[in-house]
Length: 369
Image 1 (cartoon, rainbow, N blue to C red):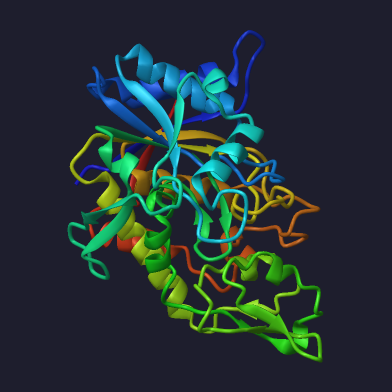
Image 2: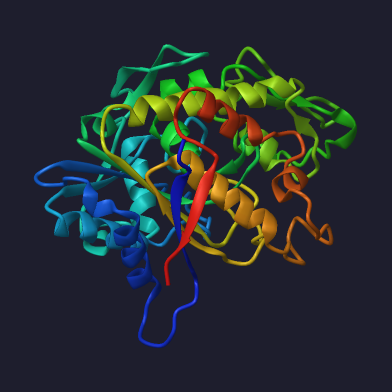
């Protein structure tokens, strides 16, 4: 079986050449024009960023993708689904407000923005998962499934539950409706290690289910009857006091996310772009971003989202860790993602994707100047 082709361009821009021009050239070299866009609706799946976070992708990148789709005769729209946790993107109107605040609008991107699962996050379609092992169907935002063609534009970064977040996560988790996100997160409920808890209450601010309370000892407690298992409290705790006690839960989350991605992509043309800059240790869902863990690397594109993510993992792990970041002085040839999030195993994401035929982690890298 031939290796999947992944195309790469670095961040260097000689005088007279912009990074956006390099992105467009990369898409063309990767073969995006082999897709017939003529009069087709094209979902460009993106993460608009939680307000307060400054590591999300700039709207300029989305405009470059939208312009290329329009030049090829397609009708692009930017899209994402509502979030499960408390924040500025857990319903349609607030989600649009957050996108606008972060610079996303028809004027800045050249296309419309549609929240795929609607005002309340209930506008979804039950979609088959071909070859699914854990799931037979997925609840996907309707607007995403109504599109003829799917493009993912992804900020590659770390993630507290899945190890890393790239194309697979943006497609799978990001395309699930609120109910779909509940399905993916349902296997594990976090617990508090009381000896590490300082009673700062940061975790409670991020809990949409009001599942976290504090006793007379000022230590956090999690009511598992209320808890949705979204894991936001894990990322919110700076003291490593909240953990998922079941290691397999994160692996199952990764596997379900992969199966959701398979449901989204099956049976229609798709293309994927990862931008590896401002590689923050946590998801852009946070209302803040920690220092980048490695220097900016470049932009990758492929028809295979699994090969794409694996190429980015390898590039990040080959890069030197940044002093002053969460990696601290742990600089060497170790797996950066395992250092940042030791309770996760990102490999389960790639392995399951190969198992169910989403793509291949075996790739050939082509350099685009």
